[in-house]
Image (cartoon, rainbow, N blue to C red):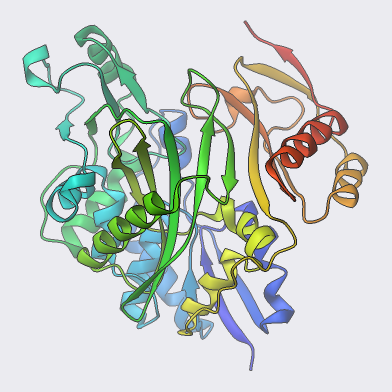
Length: 425
């Protein structure tokens, strides 16, 4: 019998990856879109008030009406939060709202890290947008600041002085509408009393290698998926590529896995995928958590498949219907793979993008390639959701037999895909 799976806040990547499993697993997917939240934080404009309870009620009504067998969301916020709440109310398999909140609320997450994995926890302090601070009130400069709830690194910034802090608090006070669902969920599903419409000042982490470790929990058991290296453009916090498998020493990877498992177990995370961004300092041998995300790293789903043979969406589907995932290792057609965000460091007007023929030529030449064009002709790159430091216009996913071939393939694809921009200085 066909299984009905509800996908809350589906993204383009969800639609692209999930369609291959309709027939393979006899599944009917039901997309459930909710209010567009990202415009609140990116455009910094208030909109209509959001009634989170009504949205969740609508999801629950849909679940009952369509006999939904499982629910999932790769959307960090509010998708995974709303999905967990609806699942709890309908007895579907998913992480609890409390465990989701302890990851998504960056300050609460830091408090939990300090409690359960102190050796990997960075010092953190909650700062409110409307308060005046002196240098004595905040952590030593420099520190890293970001909204307690954001997306795509919007509002993440290094702060080097009190003047920079004052300017930041003035210019990054995002509308309350974006954080309202998290505030609502905290009051309803946890015992905590902390604001979400605020920011967090964190100890500035020195490190040579940044990674993302991904794992999943099922029936109380946590398994690790793998570790992806995050390589940045020199002197920036903008990513150049995400490469798998990690080049970190096996012993360091094991320590990262132990830290991640212990933390997720202690906060009660179960029956779902998670990923944790970590920093390793090879001079001090220290590992620190950057942030914890209570959902799959969908950007890496096919990267793992290229190397290991299992797409992460297959894991999510198994968990959603209450089955223990069967995960392959090193059974893919490549030895290494990467996600390349194609970006520039100036805003630009998009004149033209590759047509379908160009895209298909790349896919025909390089097996299992994924191409996702972010910007469209007539748009400014700044019209798209960006990290605030650079301008991404395309995502390119490739596999190769080794690191050198991987980079060579990327350069070849760049030449084959023709974008035209008018730079704005």
